[in-house]
Image (tube, rainbow, N blue to C red):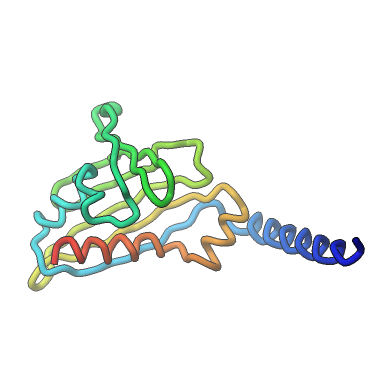
Length: 165
């Protein structure tokens, strides 16, 4: 029995250290990723502003459930690797800017992605800025030091490249 005591104490100490570090990290963060594609802005806009088409090109989304508009804003639930997450379009300025916000207040994270599309030589550039919040201190540590704040955006931009090019 004594041989179980030391690993249990070490595990508890590790969790306490993770919690302490997580509490010191800010809840809010911002991250930006950018990519250039060989298609015009309208073609990118058509893909990123169509939630019902996401399962066809995003590997992290298995299906989308369209919800009733919320105060005139498009809303949906993405179902996939990250579970069920409700989103809504907060602002839409075709084909240049789109702001999509997580609409579920019961998750351990929240925030919005701002997509900006600009013409570029031979195509378009997309910039995604995540203004996120991570409420769970252990998730904050993992996001900051293990996964990175930009890992989801990087995967998204790669999936978008496969779709449009």
